[in-house]
Length: 187
Image (cartoon, rainbow, N blue to C red; front, top):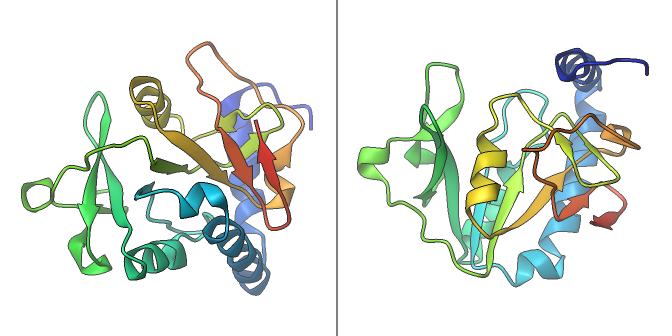
């Protein structure tokens, strides 16, 4: 793969992600979910900061439902012009779609998450590399959030999107752990 820019890689990985058969994607995502919910990192967390998956992203639906069912606090991101904060939800009914079709919360009717030492942040990405870097969506929201707050971060990644190396810049923040359908990679 001889691509130079992050934008070229985003396009490549987006097409690859969208080309995976839905049944295969569902099976892989179930395995990733199982690997997360049995991990010590998850079990020791009291607050789960998590994106609400759309399209061909690693599906977070079961993680959210499981977390709520076992009494964990769950918070989803809300993006502002220059940053991102997380707001608690008690069910999927608390979500509405924003102008981009992404499920989010009405911050006027939601409680801002209070981060603790046992907070776990699940970060989205097109791909992750062996150093812990991720190829995100290009807004820098998660990098700024992770730089500002001391929380543990985990990337959910299908094996074919775990690569040797991705381009990184000074402001990019490494993910602490990457979980695939068959392994946990501690950075």
